[in-house]
Image 1 (cartoon, helix red, strand yellow):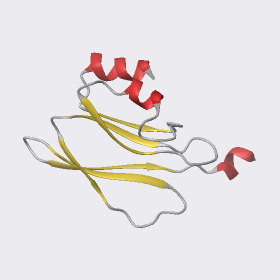
Image 2 (cartoon, helix red, strand yellow):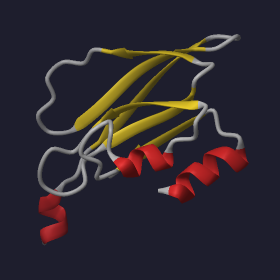
Image 3 (spheres, rainbow, N blue to C red):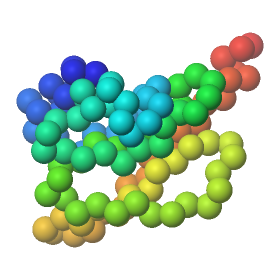
Image 4 (cartoon, rainbow, N blue to C red):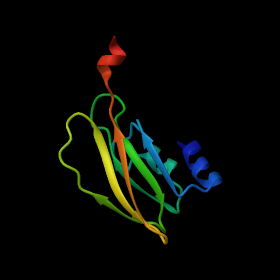
Length: 104
């Protein structure tokens, strides 16, 4: 996870979207190690099974609010509205794992 922190820092990324994070909560040590000190996180941890955690790491100077989605049963998603100096941006991070394809 420190490699993710390094990529964000050295590439000066404002936003990084991750899937298959495997973190269990917002306080997960791996997630904290991945997040630079000047960044914040919006995430949906994985609760059971394999993978399935999704995360958006973004610079704190970007105003960000999470948008409510309807109850999702076949995939996970996070939708956020980020407000920058130039314009608002809607970002939708979707994760779907079709285990039936992997098992064939």
